[in-house]
Figure (cartoon, one colour):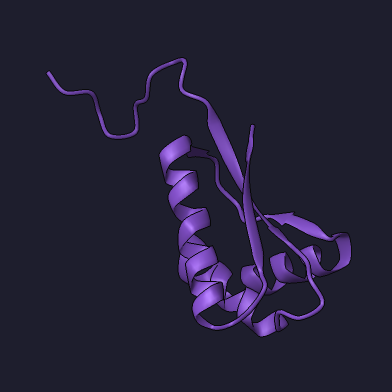
Amino acid sequence: MTPEPDQRPLDESLYRVLILNDDATPMEFVVDVMERFFGKDHEAALRTMLYIHHHGIGDCGGIYPFEAAKNKVTEVMDFARKHQHPLQCVMEKK
């Protein structure tokens, strides 16, 4: 019998994905990242971007297993580089 998709081993660590503020990445680009990669609607994405802007760092929402968090970080970083923005995305153990 295969475990349900939302079940994970009890010892698997979970991670938050965070975005760091910088002075060069346009705010609208950060909003686009929130919508595109984290499934936020425009208002939620805007609130998250403003939080990051005012606090220097912010949680993108969601708690992920290691591989999923790593993939999110990679996708965001690749997207930022493709658009020539210095946006930084990191993961942090919960």
